[in-house]
Figure 1 (cartoon, rainbow, N blue to C red):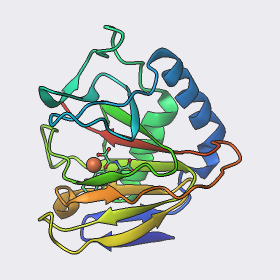
Figure 2 (cartoon, rainbow, N blue to C red):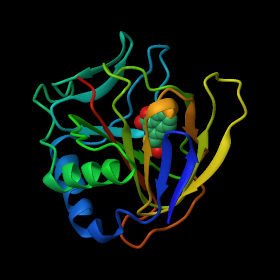
Figure 3 (cartoon, rainbow, N blue to C red):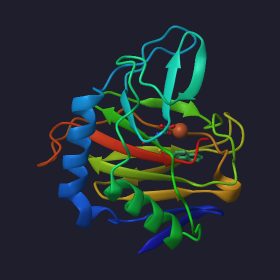
Figure 4 (spheres, rainbow, N blue to C red):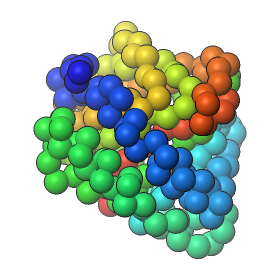
Length: 203
Ligand code: MD3
Ligand code: FE
């Protein structure tokens, strides 16, 4: 059932399925306290993906740059706490992929609507690149682009469905990646959207 993508990356198909109701409930609670918003890139573009965060640190972008911040700039308050179901799921997925003892301090929640995409980028705002990243796909399916160490390297296309979890670490940690524009679709619990939870040890 586990599919190694390359050295350091593994897809755990359906790993989050058993936790669907508590995950949905936790996402609703977080979004009520820290609503999804469209961040502005340092270059001045509005991101098409809607974002919010849970946990001690949240990823934010504005004209000044990308960074992790303990405070939600929209509310002036700390981000909502990391739910136990998030911590347990991320830790169990990381352990199954060979990264024991993973305790994330940041969960970025991305909301994709049909047509929304994430262009190729590297995740380099974290302090320790030895720590893995765990990503949980929920709702309508997407095609993930998994490239190489340079933006122009040819990218693999990886279809990700509701409940799939991917663990990225070791030599895969700094590879370029993105998400193709989402095709219109409907999921019975999540509606016309895809939610991705990205767990990181940022600080
Ligand atoms: C591969 N999010 O928020 S998470 C992001 O589906 C982001 O919302 C995507 O990329 C999403 O930065 C994918 C999966 C992911 C995260 C980090 C990686 C894949 C990665 C780092 C290296 C290689
Ligand atoms: Fe990323």
